[in-house]
Amino acid sequence: MNKDIITVTSPLLPDLNDFHAELQKIWDSKWITNNGAYHKKLEGALAEYLGVPYVSLFTNGTLPLITALQALRITGEVITTPYSFVATTHALWWNGIKPVFVDIDPATGNIDPDKVEAAITPKTTAIMPVHVYGKPCDTQRIQEIADRYGLKVIYDAAHAFGVKVNGESILNAGDMSTLSFHATKVYNTIEGGAMIMHDEKIKQRIDYLKNFGFANETTIMGPGINSKMDEVRAAYGLLTLKQVDSAIEARHQVAVAYRNALREVEGITFFDDMPGVTHNYSYFPIFVDTKKYGMSRDELYFHMKSQNVYGRRYFYPLISEFSTYRGLESAKPENLPKAHQMANSVICLPMHHALTENDIQRTIECIIK
Ligand code: T4K
Image 1 (cartoon, protein in one colour):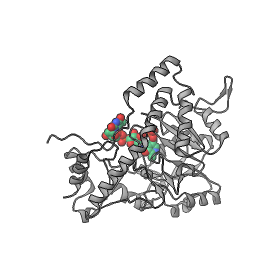
Image 2: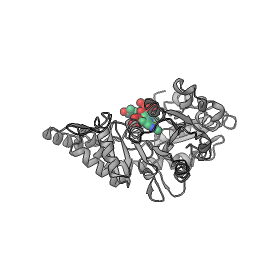
Image 3: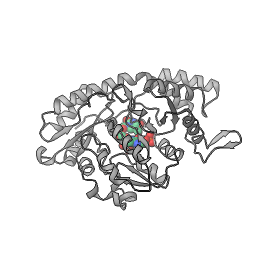
Image 4: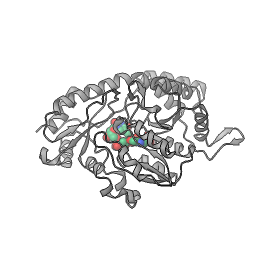
């Protein structure tokens, strides 16, 4: 076999000449980090593009999660989902907070609001849901519960760049949302991330916290960290932002092709678009029913690999299965049956803007027997 590898994703890259021109300006200015002109410009451009009031840029998508918990002084227990990338729960652990896992809704892969209330204890201070694969959580139900119990809500929106519900950005839900701009995401700044907030004062607080807590040369307003995005990545991000709409449209077309080809395949299911939602097609998960399909998820996964089609089992194993978290009462598999079922059946197919017709066909052929 001599077929090119098809990777699960591929970064959206700016034109090298355009990037070089921006680098030249940065070099000339000799200002390469610490809230420079490109940093400010990208924060403004993203706020406008995303339809949110305030954006604070970060070096990755993990640090805004950690910083949001610090800024809101979250302690005790936080209710979250086991069906995510480990960074979600690690952010709690780094703050000395106990994660409390609740099961997911198989219709979306997101935390099941029906299960949240039973997990609340006197120590609960917040809920940290994830819009997994960019599919919006039931933000209304989650907010109702949070309001009833006086809890904060921080959304890990790492996958939800540009996602809207009835024209409104999903990033405006809850107290704060965080984004990842990692190379593997719909929109990237190589490494990068952001926090979205509704309030200018909070934005100010976050901007201090990501710069060691400095309010001015001699005043520290709290124990901050260093998680500022530099000028080179901000310049890169301004260029990729210009390409992101066409990249999302290309992803949309890949999703249409997969759905058309796989809809009638016995034992394979996938998500359809949700009504009223502007999707970003950040991932294309399929779910394998071993009995109906006649092959297990892992058999299909390794068969694809043998054909150089590299899907990924996002998110397997569940976060609750990792050694750090396995001992928690809420991590017991019997508490999380739906999350286990999804983690054990999922394969995310190659999904990015640069897939060719041939790549899509090769992927489909691996699945259609
Ligand atoms: N919350 C959620 C819900 C998240 O999903 C993530 C990150 C975070 C928080 C934290 O955000 P960051 O701190 O990462 O900004 C990847 C990413 O590293 C990670 O950002 C992402 N989620 C997670 C779901 O996936 P890996 O270990 O699967 O990446 P890797 O290196 O295996 O790359 C996957 C494929 O992408 C490669 O096989 C080929 C392609 N690729 C990758 C890179 C890095 C490229 O073509 N070029 C590249 O430069 O974690």
